[in-house]
Amino acid sequence: STGLCTFDPGFTSTGSCDSSITYIDGLKGVLLYRGYDVEQLAECGDFNDSAHLLLHGELPTAEQKAAFDRDLTLHSLVHEQLIMFYRGFKHDAHPMAIMVGVAGALSAFYANAADVGNPQQRLHSCIRLIAKMPTLAALAYRTATGLPIIYPRNDLGYAARFLHMMFAFPTQPYNVDPVLSRALEKTLILHMDHEQNASTSTVRTAGSSHANPFACIASGIAALWGPAHGGANEAVLRMLEEIGSPERIPAAVARAKDKKDPFRLMGFGHRVYKSFDPRARVMRRVAHEVLAHLNITSDPLLEIAMELERVATHDPYFVQRGLYPNVDFYSGIVLRALGVPVSMFTVLFAVARTVGWVAQWNEMAAQQQIAPKISRPRQMYTGHMQREFAPPHADA
Ligand code: SDX
Image (tube, rainbow, N blue to C red):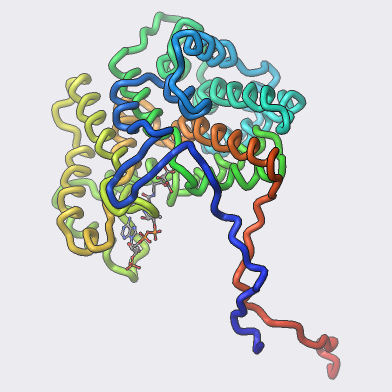
């Protein structure tokens, strides 16, 4: 060969996997968690039920729900020494930088009880991670803003507990608004799992080496941070703010279509969905619900988003390429209305996606016990084939 691309006969794809957790039909815009439609789970169910469903495969019985609710409540505290980690970050560190660090640091506290070959210890680690992520997230916000730490309250549900840790003050009463808490709960359910997306595949790859679950989740957080993936919700809001008015939408759409311009419509398009992302439909409804509840009769960014969706979904460039709003397109508007700062948007995505990450990790670890197989994708080699070495500059 002259070093042109050669096909390695040993090329085997280890990128695919068997999973019974989440099903997507990208052409029909269908998303199922263990066979249940995600729109029904979000509109009618609660966070803990959907988390139990993804982790265990079934919705909980009354007895299972009581035990699962208790576990997620009692494990929401983090070790006091872990809180000292937060003091070491630069004051303006991005919260995702903090989350990558502290999630991995959980290994220092719990890895000794996380034998990946032990099903009970695996499940316990999954519970710990789901329960602690909101606390880690709120700590990132409170310490970065110099606010006093608020501990998780046992009398609140999952979403309400997070809002309380984010926005309460020890010096005065704080009542969580049930409508806003419910809006956050729907948002979290919609973001829980999504088959083998980039961050979940990262978690599975890390887990296939038998790394401890806390280190695996830290790798998933790192992958999710990218603006092409989970970072898109933050990027959507910045894009809507940059567009600034409905009158400037045609110019933005023209830029997004111009191959010479790196600008893309953030929150649009998807590797799998070539029709409407079902999560985007629910997020659009939640955005209207929250703004109506807050008596915000007109939100400039929502108006820009709605008009941008209308223009783009009637433009042949987008329609022919199957480019429609994805889950990130409206989620930023909801989180902003809840008072969550833009820098925390992807952190919220990580909190929700931890449920899918640990469920997929646990499924993979169980499969590994039957047939251990480390993830080892191959490549299409495009470099030089072997050539003789001659000392460089021999004639100098
Ligand atoms: C998430 O995988 C998952 O499941 C992810 C996720 C999850 O829940 O885990 O759903 C979460 O990551 C949602 C996606 C969030 N990212 C964004 O919103 C960023 C903006 N979107 C794009 O960067 C893009 O759409 C991707 C990265 C999402 C997908 O990119 P691909 O794989 O290149 O998309 P494609 O192959 O379908 O593109 C087809 C064409 C290409 O043009 P042509 O070469 O055919 O001329 O559409 C173009 C692309 O250039 N295109 C866009 C576009 N997205 C794709 N053009 C303008 N604006 C866009 N947003």
